[in-house]
Length: 261
Image 1 (cartoon, rainbow, N blue to C red):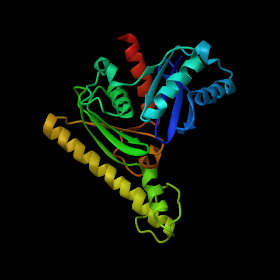
Image 2: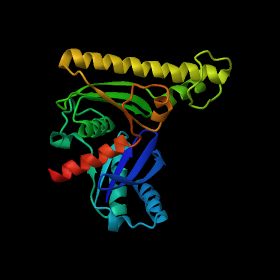
Image 3: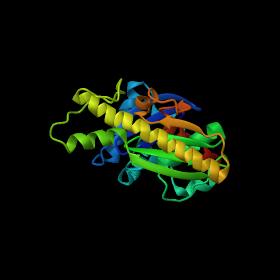
């Protein structure tokens, strides 16, 4: 079995795969104050709760991190947990991928999104990742990343609104029945949720237009991922697929490719 760890700004996904099949998934709140030993203890408790021995069943581990201060901590934690060295998603391995990365500065989560989406579709595609940031990654049918767009994430926008105002309450991240809000909750849901629906649809449409004009891409598949992808998926038909686990699946695939190099 393989272990894939996706370290995000808000949460850390720890996924256990049997081949390409997701067997177990755990989530940890991101805390830069924790040490590698602490994270190793947390992950060990996950395995023990399932009566699994990581040292026996985990053959390899791949780590993607957009939090640099935690990368080494998790390399250390994975070694304690499994007894084996891990692979880190980095530009050192980009040449082995079936996609072409335009810059070494590109976030490892975006690389894994693009890698997994292109490996599945083998065609032009756009990934929309609903994380702390809302990211759009466009990939040409040749595998070259055509470009990326980044906006504040849905929950990030909500939290900013609440923390910057005195009277607006926190509200559920739900699609309102009408854009015409008649109470505070529905007013906020209309502005933020439906506003983001418009942002997403407009940006995807613009990306598709440019990919068609610049590269002749006539068919572009759109895959949404991230914990909040389900919030908008019920309000729009612009997504061809919604896969909450696209990124961590891409982390697993990255490690598989590097192992074969």
